[in-house]
Image 1 (tube, rainbow, N blue to C red):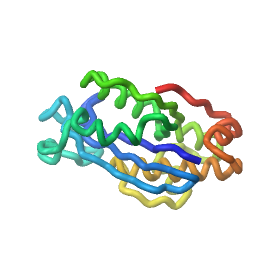
Image 2: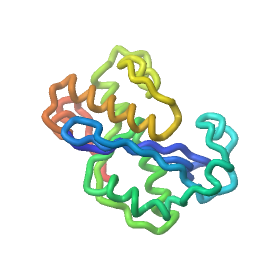
Image 3: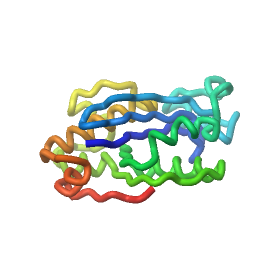
Length: 182
């Protein structure tokens, strides 16, 4: 059971100001990390986004750009399965960030933990990260990328556990959730 959970917080539209990653190896979260990112739209920060995550232009003023971080991020994201809660959003931000700096898209396939949750726990009134985390007693600082990625990894592991999955592909098949190419 090997995959990487990913989460972005954005300054505006598809411009990330924080990325969080949690690596799962053999069914265990072995490492979690987050980085503030100086967004390509700096110094502009959408006030609504800033209200959600609390990251200000001042906090990212000295941060590395996505391009400067890429050599550190790439090993987490290539040749692997990625998972995100509402994966369409995070994959869109990842693709846009790569395109912004003319960086090649790494080979990866991804799946969505919202989809896993909808299949595994149909009775929940919502499948938002907060609701699913509360259901599983996962405590985290919501809307901070590192914490959100870690919660997403835990949710994916719990969903796979419900169907006694041997690996990611087995779990996705049993839950009826597909993989998509990055």
